[in-house]
Length: 276
Image 1 (tube, rainbow, N blue to C red):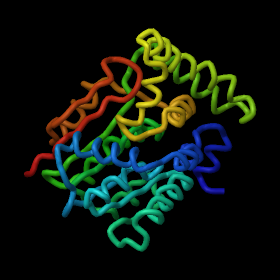
Image 2: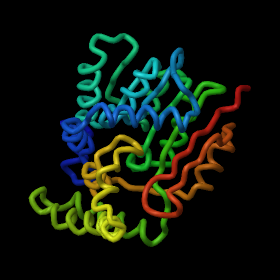
Image 3: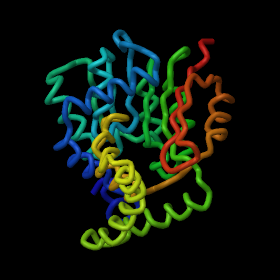
């Protein structure tokens, strides 16, 4: 039994890869296009041709695929073997036998593994590092992977104080429950997350509009994101200024910041590493 499987069995880790495998069944061209638009907007580019792209925690492989479609040379890795399998499946579908897209199992906490990767023009890690169990160490570990003058695009859960502590307990409970009973946590959490939006849309005369258009932001499935959110454990959070200070002190300049307005979800950061 590998370390990942052992941690899942010990209820210390959510099986993100199993969730992403189900997501691939609803992946379509529209969601892929929205993922490409997300990268183009946040990185302020029209193309990634001629650039190297490292996807730290590739998950479903969607954003590795988007980067490859934008012309980047892509290296994807994930700690979860099922996530690696998902990324390989997308490569098989869209870029079979492509020498410009490498996929591996690896951990952002494994310094020996990271030291063999080299440096990249773009290092991307969306919603991953806060699930490692050592978020601040993981954030430190991505620093050497960025070329001088390169970009680092990370998304980290926002620290909501008491609410974040509550979600920590909910996520821990979800993972400790037998699989057949996890709906006891998932259903109430789903209602808490989506009912206010559904009621608002109904009152505005546009039933389920937000649900139907959810993929327009990142190309993700709303239901899969709910399961991912509730089950996502380990779970850590950070205030924007904490993330900013860490990278500023290591020679990075903030290029772009997209916050979740103090609410639930991730703050997104694009940093540029100093060229000298």
